[in-house]
Structure formats: C-alpha cells, structure tokens
Image (tube, rainbow, N blue to C red; front, side, top):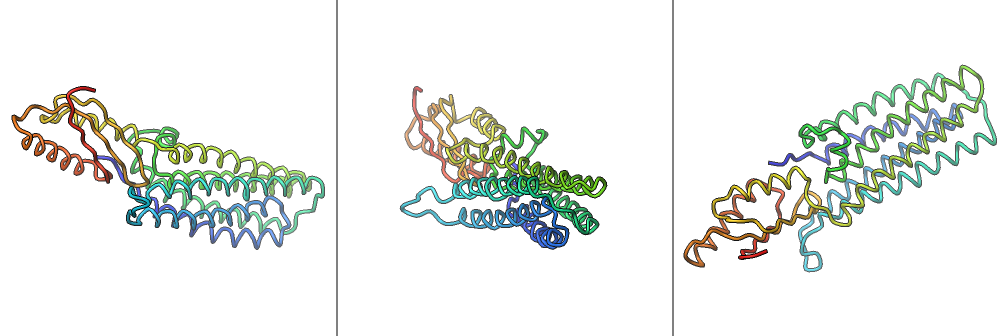
Length: 302
C-alpha cells in the first residue's frame, strides 16, 4: 500500500552531477579568483563526499541482524544522514562564510568572468538534472502532499538529504551567478564577497532543517502518518479482530517494526485463535511489505 522510492538511485544521480560540477567549479575558481565560485566548488566537493557516505549507509542497512543487533542495521542510514547534515554545515556553510568575510577584508578583482558564468550555467543544468532524478523518487511517495508536507513526514532520510542538497545547490548556483554578474557589471568585488557569504548562510539553513528531520528518525519515529492510517484501517476491517487496543510502529530505515494489541473474535479454541492471528499477520505483511517485525498480542482489555 505504501509507495517505495529508490533512495540509492537519487544518491547516484546526485553523486555524478556533483562530481562533474565540482571539477568544473574548481577550475573556474582557480582562473577567476572568485570567492563565490570557490565557495560553490567546496560546496560541490562536500556534496559529492556526502553522497559517498549515504551510499555507505544504504549498504549497511542491508546487513543481516546479529546477536548484538537483533533488529538489524536499518537505522544506520539515519546516522550517516545526520553526519551529512553536520558536514554540510561545517565544511560547506562555515567555509563559505569565512571565505566571504576574507574577501570583504581583502577584495580581489574578478578575472575571466565569462569562464565563471559559463561554468555556473553548466552547473545549473547538471544540478537541475540531479533534482529531476530526485523528484522522480520523491513523487513516488508524495501521494498528493505538497513538498513541505512530504519533507516533514517522510521516513526516507537519504532522500531527504539529497533533496535538501539539490535545492541548496541550485539556489547557491543562482546566488553565485548573480554575485559574479553584479561584480562584472559594477567592477565592485563587494558583490562577490556578499554572494559567498549568502551561499554559506543558505547551506547552514538547509543543513539545520535536514538535521532536525533526521534527528527525529535517530531518536525513533513511527511509520509515515499515511501508512499508519492505512494499517489502522486494515486492522479495523479484519473480521478476526473485535477491537484494536494499541498499534505501535517504529521505522528502521527501509523496514518497520509493528506491535498490535487487540481483542480477537472468539473462535471456541486456542488453536482457532492462533490460526486467526497467523492469518491476520500473513495478510498484514502482504499489504505492508516493509514490515520486518510484527508482534501480535491478543488480550481482553487495554
């Protein structure tokens, strides 16, 4: 019932785009001596490194459970996603602000502005392709929700991170382009410095938003509200169940743990109740394939 987006596909899209963009920006920053371009180059390098960390995290989620980790390693992706937000804040945001302040104190003329403008236009196209790939996966699990609602309710931490990075990257490119054009037209390097600082502030704001969302998943969060409502409706419609007392869920990366406490319809025998519970569990797992652990407790009161 619940849609499944392919987070790995979005990460690979972003990794390819950011690697090519970082190389182009680095070359342009060297020739133009633009602080905004250098900030964007560092931003893209950090993004590419972040994508490698996300790939590592996604691989770890597939490790089989052990005695020390009986519920598996699904939540490891949350750690790596949170680390990515920290790196985006420290490496990308703080460095950009530092570089911008340095340019304010020691302004330098802009060289070869057309190189910078050409590279930024290329980067905008490449980053738009990356965002398009990310949005294809996001749309698989939006179900009519707007982007903000999806961002706040999604349990796909890797997808949240890639989406945040892509948005920050596109806006950062626009800021850098405006700063370089303004510097070129006016001849005043102040605009380049202000553009560099604005990129840093943008990265910090995005990193904080991403970190807040991933923090909830690290602490422990239920499945998405839409999926939870579907689970409640499924159990309420079962003829074997007289009343559902409690339904608890916990997201573990791509998997979920579900615990149900319910009063069963009398069957006349213990064996009949066991068969009824097994039937409900089997069809529940079919309806919600992300359910890796399902605990069903029959009771007569809450």
